[in-house]
Amino acid sequence: MYQPFKITAELEIRKHGFCFLNPKRIRLLKHIQTGGSILAASKELRMSYQQAWTTVRDINSTASLPVVTRQRGGANGGGAAVTPFGLKLIERFDLMQAKHDTYLKELEDELDICV
Image (cartoon, rainbow, N blue to C red):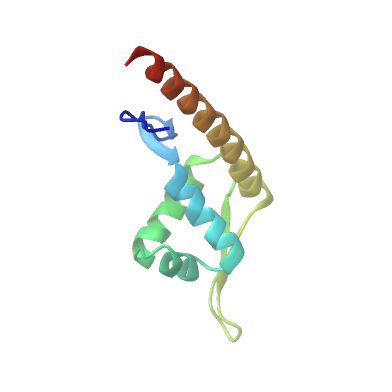
């Protein structure tokens, strides 16, 4: 069925007027978890390492507990991991995103009736 109108909205959790979590930040966290480093995640997402590191720092400073932990380089190299608390944040955000997507679809269905 052809739908000429589409409703768009992005789920974003803010604290004190600043972004805490959004889909892009969640993707970064997921890539850090699977790749084991901020650098690998930044390359995968085609963002600068500095941007990825700044985003991780912002998330960690806003959250009540650490979301990402880092290990400095050495003989075996450095790395990063999403903490158990961070994994819970990802899981909850994904559940909220699913509800958000469902609600947008419901709104679009209502829009089809009106136009």
